[in-house]
Image 1 (tube, rainbow, N blue to C red):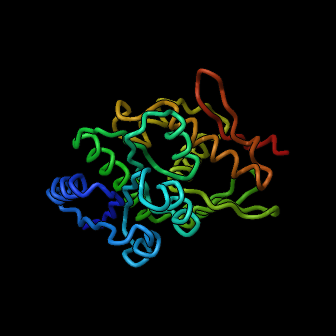
Image 2 (cartoon, rainbow, N blue to C red):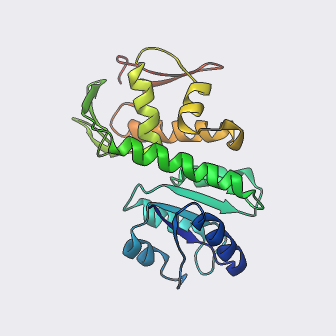
Length: 229
């Protein structure tokens, strides 16, 4: 049974979500002190976090940064705000998905199921080290290493990189990436993929591999085996 931490200060919405999600056999936990969200997260060690943006004391972006500094646990943001920048910021801070309030529970449940299936089925697979572009890719630890250092990726970023490496030097279409990452692309913005790939590329730039992920305008992306700066 998966443990879900719901960081939501709207008591009525929290109880409604807890009731609905519990019907899917998830263990739902809330926050008792919104000044200590990170500590309660650490104590619980949940399998997935649903995080509201507008919270008492500190906003959801603050707590997302705190969690991401220690863990790659899947995070879904909730927000009643409709600014596109909120979605972009969520992805930049390391969120796996974004749901705007008010939302249909079937959509939220579909997103939760897709993320849990992808992350934990993928993580449960026996994987090996992979060499790509002069670097060592560790699928278990979500790291990419070479003689210039090591970068740690989120689950989404590693999943994208794995899909690209499997077809290295070939174009992988945006539709294929979206369909592989999210079961139902009607529920996500095309911009979500762009943000994830840009974040992946930015991390790879830290070890000189930024140019090894090439954008093919109107087509998709390609993981290059050569052309490393």
